[in-house]
Length: 347
Image 1 (cartoon, rainbow, N blue to C red):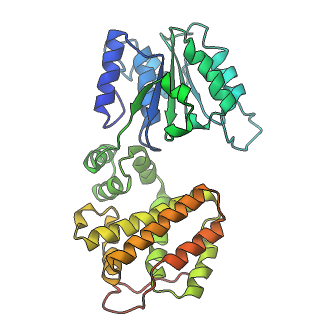
Image 2 (spheres, helix red, strand yellow; image 1 turned 90 degrees about the vertical axis):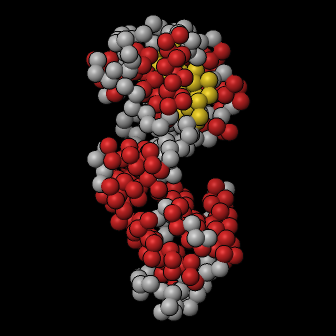
Image 3 (cartoon, rainbow, N blue to C red; image 1 turned 180 degrees about the horizontal axis):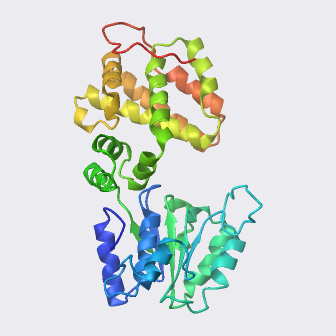
C-alpha cells in the first residue's frame, strides 16, 4: 500500500513501470517543501524491494526495515550525511566526498539483501558543482541494480545535464478537501483539520507537522494579533516593534509569507470571495482590515511584501527589509466602526 497521498497519476505510472520492468535508472521528484517527496521516495524504495506480489505491502520485513531506515540497500543522503558526529554544525551543501563515499564507491556492488540499491538525495539542489559532476558519471553509466532518486523544490538550481538524465516526476499540491480528509484519517480534529488544509497550500507534510507542533498555533496567533494591531500604530511603535522580529532569514521568510497569506485573505474578502479564505480563524480581523483599506492599498502592501521576500533572497539586511515593510504598510486611525476587537499590545 502506497503511503503517498493525492499523487495517483505518479503512483499509477510507477506501478506500471515496476510491473513492466521498464524502470528508469534515475528519478527527479520535483515539488514544494513538505509536499511528500520523501514519502514517495520511500514508497518507491519499498515497492522495488518488497517480497510480495503487490508491492509495497508495508508489512513484510523489508518494507518495515525501509520505513525504519534500517535497510542497507536504501541510502538517504542530505547535506549532513557523512559529517562527524562531534561536528554539530549543519552543512550548507552536499559535498563531492559525500557522493563519492555513499554512492560512487558502493553502487557497483550488488545489493546486500534486496533487489535494488536505492539512493535518495534530499535537497539535490544543494549538491556542489563537483558533487553534481561526480554523480553525473554514475548517471551516465548506471548499474542495472541501482535506482537513484533526487528530491528538489528548486529544479532550476540543478545542472541541466543532471535533469536530462532523470525521469522527472512533478508532485502537484493536494486540493484542500483531500488534505482535510487525510488529516482527519490521521486523527486530527475536524475544525483544526479544516483550518490546516487551507493553510497548507496543498502540502500535506507541512499540515501534519504543524498539527503535531503544540507551539505552532500559539506562535501564529501571536504574530497575526501583532500584525492586526500594526495598522493603527504610529511610526515610533512600528519601528520599535521591529526589534521583536526574527533575526534569522528562515524565520523572517516564514513571517513575511504569513503576512502575505493574511493580506491575500483581506483582498479575497474585499472581492466577496470569503469561501476561499485560508485563515479561517481570523475572519473578524480580516473583515476589519477589509473595511479599513481600499483594494489599491491592499494590493500595494502585497507588492511590498513580495519585494521584501525578493530582497531577502538577495541577502539584504533584515532590519532594513522590515523597516521598508513598516513604511509601506497602510496606516489608519483607530475607529470604533471598523475595529472589531481592541488592538493588542505590541510590547
